[in-house]
Amino acid sequence: MLPWQSYTGAKSGFKEAEEALTKAIRLYENPRAYRERGMLYLQLNNPEKARTDLKKASNLGDKEARNAVKILEN
Image (cartoon, rainbow, N blue to C red):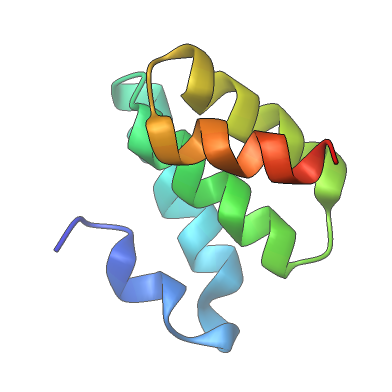
């Protein structure tokens, strides 16, 4: 389990999840962290932030994020 995954399962933990993912991104430009934060933003109904993070993850080589970007752009 990655450090931020323990937060993403609980709705009450969205803020904590965002903070953990942002910290992971600051420490290391991690495509999975960008993808996970993008998906979190989708759950929070913030498609602009989600699209930004998912595109960044995709640009860093994350295939799942690339697929999510394609879905968002349709």
